Structures are given as C-alpha cells and as structure tokens.
Image (cartoon, rainbow, N blue to C red):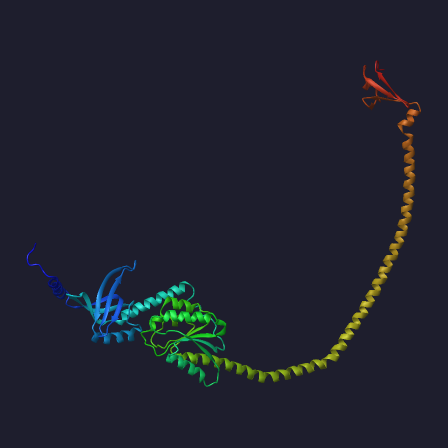
Length: 435
C-alpha cells in the first residue's frame, strides 16, 4: 500500500488545477443543447451533447452554465438575431471556459454565443424540409390554388387574445369601401412548443367544413420573435401545403421567412397586411364588376340601336327578296312540270314498245313450242321402231356372252358359253365350232 494517499477532495482539486493549467483560455465549441434550465437566481444550466451523424447516438456530453449577468445579455441577443428561442434541441456555437469543481465535476462556462451558426443550422433544416416537400411533389400545391374573386368567408387561425387578431378584424370591419367580410376564429396556440399541433388541429376543423370558407388566414401579433421556430416544422408545412383552400400567412415578422410562409399561397408581413390583401382583392373584383356595368349601360343602347337599324334594313329588303324567291320557285316549278311531262311521255312509249314486244314473244313462243312437240313425236316414233323388243318379235335374236351382245364370231372360241335371247325366252349354248 502506497504512503500518503490522497483524499477525493484533494484528487479533485489536483484535477481542477491541472485543467486550469492545461486549458486556461476560452474556446469556441459546437454542440447541441439537450437541456436548458434557468433557475430562480437567473443562472441558466445547460447540457451540451454531440451525436453521431449517421447513427444519431451520443458520442459526447458535458454540463454547462451561463451565469445570470451573462445570461440576461446573451439570451435576448441570441433570440433577436435568430428568431429562435434559446431552448433545447438547437445547435449552438458558444465560447466557453473549461472548469472542474471538486463537488460538481467537469463543466463548461459560457461567456459568449455566435447566433450566425444557429441561423445557418436553421437555414439548413428549412432547406431539408423544403427539399423533402419538393421530392414528395407537394411544395407548391397551395400556391397553385386560385384565389377566390370575393374572399369574404374567412377562416382565421390565431390566438383569441392576440393583438394581431383584433387588428385583423378591425381592419376588415372598418374598410373604407363598406365591404362585408365574415371572419371566424379557429383558436390555436401561436407561441411555444404547441404551435405545430395546435395549428394542425385548427386546420382539421376547417377541413371538416371547407365548403363554408373561401380562404384560411394564419395570423399572429404581439408574440416574441423567438417563437417563430414553431412555424418551421415538416408536419405543419406538409399539412398546409396540401390544404385545399388558399392559405394567407401574416405572422408578424420582417426579417425572415418561415417554412410556413414559403409554402403558403400568399405571405404578408402582418395581420393588418393580410386584411388589406383581402380588401384589395374584393375591391379589384368590385371595380371589374363596376367596369362591366358601365360597359353594359354604355354599349347595350348602342348595340340595340345598331340591331334596330339592321332589322329595319332586313325588313325593307323582305318584299323584294320574297318576290325574287317566288319567281325563282315559279321558274323551278315550270321546269319541273316540263321535265315530268317529258319523262311520262318517254315512259309511256317504253311501256307501249314493251307490250308489243311481249305479244310478239308470245306468238314466237307458241310457234316454237308446236315445232318442238312435233319433233318429239317423230323422235318417239323412231325410238319405238328401233326398240330391241320389236326386232325380237319380228324373229330376230340376240347372242350374249357375259351379258354383252356378240356381233363378231371371231370374238368367240370353242367351249364359250353364250346365251341367245328371243322374243320369248332364252337359250344357253356351248360353242363347238366357229365358221
């Protein structure tokens, strides 16, 4: 066992002196805030983490602190420059000193912060959201919707107590043209961590009665600039981009556009600007209607007078046109009558000729029929005279061999069997001698 062992306090004190000796300077550190907690005394306690870019697993972690006198200065500065609340989940670039306390251990003390680093990370996240929406084919869907000519039925998503909502309604109600608008509030939380879920719920309620509304206006007024990060989420952007009604945003910030602004149909700076946009849309439509009305009042009498004159001209031309048409029809009727008479005469001649031909054909057919009958009778007589039966009755006979008549004795030979047929009966013989 070694002599003079160190107590834990002594060892930790040695570590603190060593760290202060080795790391005496201030260092800029990139990290993500996993915890941000301010206590009653005004000090802010942090937890810095670093995650693996591929697996998202923690690879480093450290406690941090911002003393109250520094925190009161850094927090407003950071939120003013970035439009982002100083809260967990963001990436920061901070200047720190490295310290070690015997009781609390290793920690980083924040003395400064660079908002441009967080802005860059926010822009990167916005670009990633916009790229994802573009790849899904929904990025410009809401922008492609046609704005109604008379957007008077307005679904408003805002906080009921927001000053911007009151300004919006007052602007619509007191418009100098006397146009009537019908705004209806769908309450939503417009600051803090519930922005995304609250606005999506309001959109769902509007969607269930979408035929009742012409446009949707999302407005916010009087809130902190640091609350704008709630409008930079993918889920909210995807819902708004695919919403079937045109969306107008008047979130009330001048410096930068949120993702919600970029996918909405129309983006204006403030709630009153959103009201002015709707008033101007109705005004332009009203002016067009008035122009059409003036045109009708001016052009219709002139057109009626022109048509009256044209009708009078046609009426004056009717008698001459009717007389000309009657003459044309009379001439056509005469030509038709003449052609009909000629056609009937030609047809009559053809029919008379056909009748005469038919009579001649009848006489010729009867004569030919008599001749043919006489010729048949003569042929019948000749056929009967040449009949074998008649010859056999006259004493002639027929000699047959194998059923065929024998007309040449040289075709027979001794021993052949022949049949002799007579008028009455047959005689079978055997040839003995041939002369």
